[in-house]
Length: 177
Image (tube, rainbow, N blue to C red; front, side, top):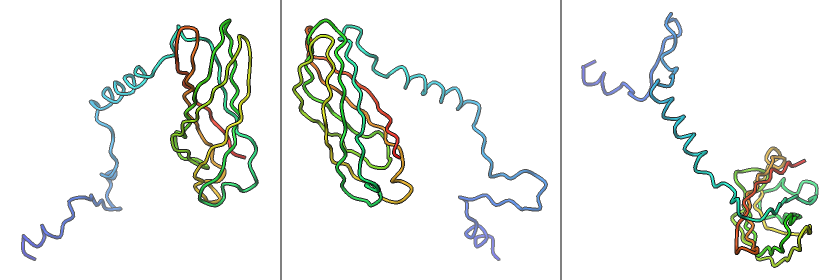
């Protein structure tokens, strides 16, 4: 073989190690020492950039629960109707109005929901709790394994209180049975 042919046949993208070699495989890659502090810095910056709850916003709690669905509802891929119950509790001494809620799935699961905004006009008296039925279209992934995966919802509730409008963000983890 000529020298140019030998170089042309080598694949520079892979390292090949011999099984008879006494040295450990050269395919194991360990993180470099300078990358660890950098990754830690990015992690801390990501945690610090999360939006904290506004201390001046009224104390209103929200919770979403999924109603029972038909057996094997998520076994086949395609559109499915998912029913929820939204519970809202006004723990203040002032009236609050829920004007809109946005719901979406955070990652893949039994189904995914694209960001959906639903207008709601519900008045909550001081100390009052209300439940609101919701129905959203979702896209089922399909398949025996994914039909039973958990779903994580991220929601934003837009409200109006005595000091003006405010937003409550919350996350719900729904376990599929």
